[in-house]
Amino acid sequence: FSALYRQYGIRNTKQANSMTLSYFPELSTSRLVAENAGLIYGNDVDATTFFQHEGLVAALAVSYCRFTIKTQHETIYVRLASAALLGYLAFMRYDYWLLISVHACTYGHQLYRFFSKRMMVKDSGSTVKTVPNPYKDMKGEDSSIVKRHAKLILTVVSAQLAITYIVYSCFQPKAAYSFFQSKVYQLVLHPYIFDTSTFHLLASKFNENMSYLIPIVEVLDAYNLLIGFVQPKILHVQMSHLLYVTVHIQIGMGFLGINFLTKEQERKNELIRLEDLASPAPTNDGDDEGVTSPNTSTNEDIPKKFSRGAATFIIFSAVPYMFQIIFYGGLNMYAYHCFKDDLYRTIRLNGLFENDGNRFVATASVDSASYRSPGEYARNMDTVVSTVYDMVNGKLFSVPKLILLPQIIAKQPMLVLKIFPFILMSDYIKSTIVATVTTEVERVNKKAKGLEAIRTRIEQFDLKNSDLIQRSGYGSIPFTKRRWVSLTEEIQDLTIRGAILNRSRMYFAGLQRHFIMIALVDCALAKLILIGKIMAKDIFVYQRAIEDSIDLLLMRSRAESQLASM
Image 1 (cartoon, rainbow, N blue to C red):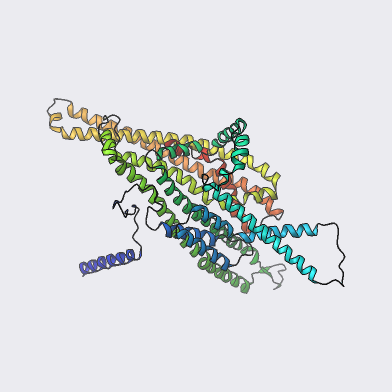
Image 2: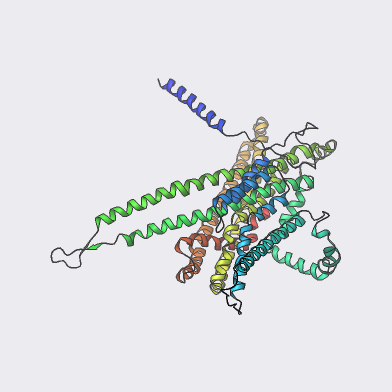
């Protein structure tokens, strides 16, 4: 019976797994088969689509971003129509300058409101007030309203056309109608402003100063390394698609996270306020004056009300947020793996056999001391790509919260100037200590791996020649044992040292964040709450905004060890 039960259970499990996988689409990170050449790895530099579902992935990304970002006085129908239009254009693989221009034009109502407010302020600020004439026909007033709206619409259309032209010129700088090919730029701006020694000096100083905060040099080195293996035009097309998908998905999830964090903080605040709501009611029974007894009916209703709110939060906030993060995060991950796997194949397979196998022969003829296998080169390239991509990916996700930082500075500039230096100083000290410990951990681990490789070769050699070692005379076996024991003990000593350093680093970084930096951030938020600039439900969002801004300012120092490894 137990054997039949196990067999039946295993069969049902396999059927359930196959049924589950049948609903999941088959995905491939390989290039599409070229129609003419019939080759999977064709080097068609004029191709715009290299992987399957590129149009669908781009359409889902941009429509999700446009529908998630909500603006004031914008109905859900406007967001749905804008998302559908952008999704269609992205699915049909239109040029990126057109996609970005249309995306900007979908927010035209915000420009209309902005210019409308400016015109109203200008009219209300006029010192000369006209006296209304009751005998005058009302047609004059109607015509002035029509002229005002016509002027407003013309201003909005002109602004959108200007934005479209700027985007077109940035994406197509060598086109005939680009601004960079115009006579104004070629004859005036370029020779007298952009091509002067003063401008080059200022630009070099700006890049030098920004390099202390942002790893610009390392990113440029990574790009120069990639174009050594991949044709630049193909690389630019693949990078453009990956960047387009990543930007829209990460920014969309960032705005979605702000709404979710606000609701989560509001729910936690209600939990804290339960103590005030469940206040005891006074009683006058007997001679004990001032003795209070709890109001049982009220206390019983409070948990039920909070439980109903928790159920609403789970169904309408937590579950949709969870599914969106999982689905669109997986979509972004698929686009990234298409790019990364194609680079891996190019380095390990395609580039190795190109030009009649010159690199294949050169790789095999390298001496054993400096030999590196094609797989090792490809894995190192994966490290370079993943390091740069993870930094960009994380910063894009924090962009919506970074937008909130100017609001904090505008509401209380002196408070930010007082608190921020202490936050930056404490975090810089922490980053320096963590980077130093991380460098030591990597050095110890690298040494341990080297000793493990040596031990493996020694063990394989000794086991292969075990008979010769045994017949080598007295002391050969004890010598072999001592050598094996010494290597094992040294590897174990290095391993425990690296493990303790790694644990100390993790605990130090976590404790510094939760008990030092967060305490300093709370000082700034407490002042903003007391003066009524923010509400209690916005605590977590603004706290994350300050943390992300600090992470952006200390981006290079925090990623020092990863950049060194790259």
